Structures are given as C-alpha cells and as structure tokens.
Amino acid sequence: MRTRRLALAAAAVTGLLSLTGCGDSLPPGAASVVNGHTITRQQVDDLAAAQCAGVKTASQQGQGQAVPRKQLTQRALGLLIDIRLNLDYGASLGLHPRQSQVTSDYAQVEQLIKALPGRYQGYLSEVFHDWARGRDMVEQVGEAATGTTATAANADQVLNAGYAKRETWLKKDASIDTDPVYAPGKVGWPGEGDSSVSKPVSSFAKSAGKAQPSASFVSGLPAGQRCG
Image (cartoon, rainbow, N blue to C red):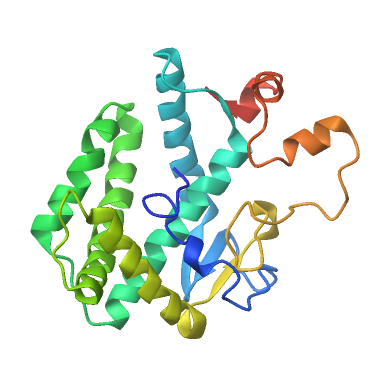
C-alpha cells in the first residue's frame, strides 16, 4: 500500500523537511508525531495486521506474494502519516471534504475491507474514511490549480497537482518525528533510513535491508516475520 498517492502519495516531499526523525521527544507508545498529532504503535500494528491478512488472502488466491512483516509495518505507518498530512493540509486551507466524493473514493476500497476477517473491518473503515477525506481535499487543491474538475480520466493528474501544492506547505509548516525503529529517512518517512546503527555485513542482513527483498529471502523468514 505504500505508493505515494493512495498509500504514500508524498514522493514530492522527499528531502524537503529539515527533520531529524530521531524520535527522542516522542511520547510513550508513539510511532510518529505529525504536526502534533500522535500516531501510536498500536494503530500501526493494527493496520499492519489487517494488511497482512489481506496479503495472506491474496497469496492463497495466487494474486500476490509474501512480504516481510517489517516492511508491511513500515508501509502501514507511512500510510497513516500521509493521511494525517492530507487532513492537516486541507484544514490549513479551510477546506472541507465533499461527502459525495468521499463516499465515491471510499467505495474503491470498501469491498477489499469487507473481504477481510471481521475483526479488522472496523478499524480499517475508520482509516480509509480518513484517507478518502484527505484525498478529496488534496483533489480540491488540484482542481483549483489545474482549473479542471477531477474525473476518472484525469484523476491522477489532478491529484498530482494537489500534491505539488502540498509540497510548498510541507516546506514551511509540516513536522514529522518518527521512532528510529521504523527506519525513518531524513524527512521522517518510515523505511527510508536505517533502523540499525551497524552496517550490514552478512548476506542475510544485506537482503533484509533491501527495499524489495527476493522471494527466496522472504520465504526463508520465520512465519511470524512474513505475511503471505
């Protein structure tokens, strides 16, 4: 889910924030603090568990492949950060989500959520309703920037224009502080840095550090460390 649009649509902001990501001032139980809003480790773990269930279902149907759970956890936090940024950006402009568009955007993922075990559905519904609200406000910015109304044919273009505008706001006003365990990069996005102070030497350590570990490496992980 970590795409910098639906699941991290923030590629445009890489390197723009002068944040340490050191996590020294994080409150207890926090995975990241975004503009003063705390994203808890429990929220990240719950989202990662739901995504893991989705990966398992897809792999059983021959529609996906296993991934390291660590990577999925980083992606889950990245998605939560991106959602928070979108909501804060929209609020800073005095925008409000358009309910009809929120309903339409949420419908894109609703069936996927309903296909998961019931224990995950409530939390995922909350997360992706927030995702849809934030997405619509960025889309509104994109529509104003391009002078066009978003349609199925130009939605990506309009959203990209909105995220480009969000970039300026991020330079001046956003703050992300992420716990080092999630390997934050310079900006604070999880998975872009190194969660270890040591340099990987063994082939196993080097494989574990890759953005896209090989299928053979993932299959060799203990069951509790992989999804699918």
